Length: 211
Image 1 (cartoon, helix red, strand yellow):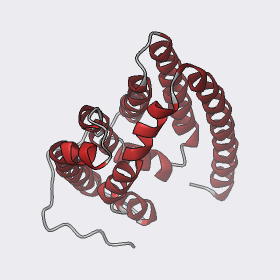
Image 2 (cartoon, one colour):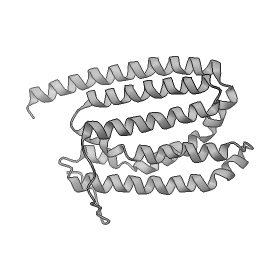
Image 3 (cartoon, one colour):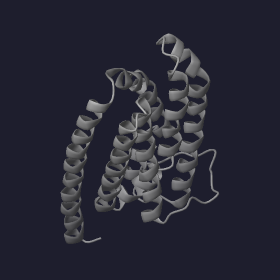
């Protein structure tokens, strides 16, 4: 890649990243505004109670491998496949933990409905784990345009569906499915645009060297 080509891709990436942030921010604000009028504060409270559990689990699932891939000079298909399956295994592990501890979480907050909400919302860990490598591949190729399109589509579609669910009286489930639908759409579109399918390769003694 020439210096001029790299410069052009970088500028294009900055433009699309800015568009992405603006659209997501504005649409997210408007969606939240309308949802706040249709939902109860308690509905947001239930999701907020789970935020820390999901955030920590998500951080541990990624384990910094995506960043390491970006820093590696020439990632191989073995790198991509191994990290893809590693993320999937770890996310499954944390999902099972949240699934079986859901009653304890509900009991701790004295909110019985959190048991089912935790078990359903935690599926986002599994869905997101499938998109880590796909998004990293786009970042390595400086393809921020595709990432922005995917992000905008996910936010808009999930936002509209959450508004329809809230209007139909689904309460907190409008927020739950907003998160799940956004993750699912993002993952499906990343697979579609990347055209990369992981091979059956997993190096159990894998070490990611940054060269």
